[in-house]
Length: 434
Image 1: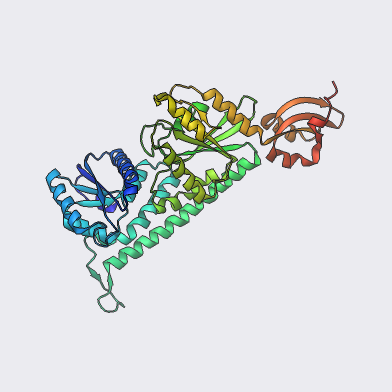
Image 2 (image 1 turned 90 degrees about the vertical axis):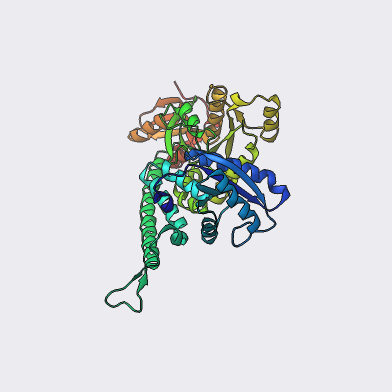
């Protein structure tokens, strides 16, 4: 964020704090604090200590009580930390109060995620989305971000003391937000055009979704051979990648890798990354990848489903895939997961175990959207015959003087184009004449 960039040196020692309000929420708060530690380490910032704080209700000044706040400030001095990071969302006023108390940089989970996204963005679309989210987050925090905001600006026609520097900067930021939104809208139109092109060539599309670092990009690389970025880091990639795969029945399928989800995702990013996540809403079905070796796998499943629900994609047909089975040593783990997800596929992208079974299951999903049909294609419509050869599975073909008789398994979207040439469902017809 702006204030981090303005520092002469990078922060080197962090104290992490997670606050919770109920005893029944302590385990979840502890797990979220551990996840925050992983997020912070992803930025390359060493963590000196983690503190879990119980408080009855949120306080306006420090979020937690002033007595506990003094204890944290003393601990920061003892550990010689230069940054305090809250797992909870802080208001701009609370951040300023904490910085006045501790004399160190104070940020929250949202800012950490925004900085990770800023470091990971590669394409123009991702960079616009990150910049938009950072601007929206920083706007109410301008008094913390700049040191010259008390200045007054005057000039010809100005009234009174003139417009304050703070007002000028806010107006400038709002203008930048408007510009970024226009650019993002332009990118969305381009993406919509690309999607229409895919619809004209009705190849089924599946979106790979899941919690960050579950192995989505690794799975895409294993299935397609695509050279996509694969790292053991949270949010290693933010940009959608679409690659084609040929299934055993010769039916092509487009696979799209989407940005990973995380708990407490800043709402600015949910909105800003909507264009990227639209790939999930527009796909024919979803492949939900989960890390079977993670003890919180069910919570991660629920987090992803919650985000999909916000996008309106939670009702789509979904194939659940448990990855990293090579790291599961407890034999009861598979039994428990199988009981909750009887239709799931268990794989190890690293070793390749279960990949063939997964490809077959994906083929079954695609076959559900394919209908075996008898067609009479006019001989002058070579374009349609070419599309059938390219996008359908042809079982039999014979030529008559005016048309070609074709029995094929055709994707549902292609059938819409071929409706007038359908003779009868293939299962009710006899074999073509030889």
